[in-house]
Image (cartoon, rainbow, N blue to C red):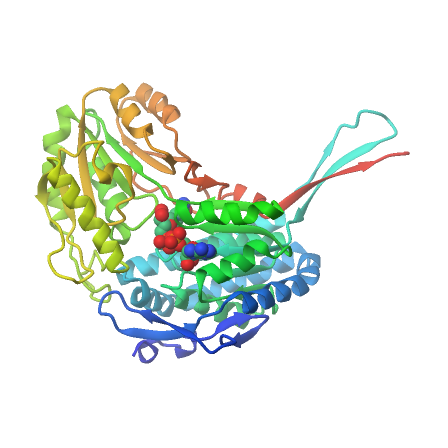
Length: 485
Ligand code: NAD
């Protein structure tokens, strides 16, 4: 039993959190939360619908005036305490995450640190919400800008980062003075509820942070149709993001959308081979390949292709697939059977179109463990070059010229993360500027950190999270004209 393994068993809750109360669904319905490594039912969470969501929105609305009126430094002080509480409970939060999501425990611990870093960062940024004075067109006027909180906000978050995708939204919202209603993925709600336990414990007032677990469509309809919700921040697939955008259109709600990607990872002949291999290991295989910025298409120039492929296969051979609770594991299970089927479909399609299996392969049993796989001679007409594979599969595509690499890299409706490896200074600038992506890594496979803006262009979304820009998503700019002076 998961509860028995926690130092603080009270972090595992089977109730939603609305207006400072721990609640069940009105009709008593529940959803099972299942460990993807072994199918064990970890908990039963309330299957809330629209009516309970409405109550959460009303609670947030009641909490708003006092929360926005609280001086920024005092909001920041509470966020600092929330941050400390996350770090104090890091082991338990990571254990809950590994059990419900599957990622290796060390990665889960890394995510808790990463998730907490947003809380710390925005606690600091809360004190720097500066307006400005604008030179007025005449002597009897003055003109200012005020930055004010947007109002009641909602967050809808995915299963692949059950902690950080919540803190990346809630920390800036709370820092700016906006209360939040969070709908976590129904696959990983326990991490969200544990965050709510800590929020309550450190004294974040009732109604400021609410977690509604349950039925995505019913909750989503209420969040998008209720006029009290001024803004929705969503991280997940482009299909659901597009649906929420349509649903929000009637009320012209503000939206932040962090959607899918199809990241190119380009290795030029002049790259540092070891750096490039390390970069692809970091970007491709973290979270078993289930991240939105995972290298999805690995483009390798002719002159380095054979050496790169050989070194990559060697490194991939060191990965260990297994239950995330085992210390040797570096690749956990995929989130569910549908995720495994998608990977199998992509690998089958690639092999049938002439790709070469360099290591790994299609899953042979019905478990959710997928062997890390490297495919050689992948091409742009294969499924895995056009859709997110979201699994530990690295397809290598051969290219000859820089122009060809750029054309392939940009030939996608997505524009989230991109990576390239070269030691040529002029190419670094030229190519970095020409990539149509929101985030570009040059000679690095790591592009997510709280101090840098995270977000995409094209169908990868709208808005930026993290950095000083992340706060703007939760602020309105008011022009304040003073006349008759
Ligand atoms: P998903 O779109 O299926 O689900 C995301 C969230 O939306 C979940 O909470 C889900 O319950 C909810 N949802 C589903 N249908 C809904 C509806 N009709 N109304 C309201 N809510 C609904 O995505 P996922 O499978 O959980 O996550 C994987 C996807 O997320 C991938 O495409 C990945 O690239 C993307 N992602 C993007 C980022 C980013 O920052 N851009 C980060 C992580 C994941």
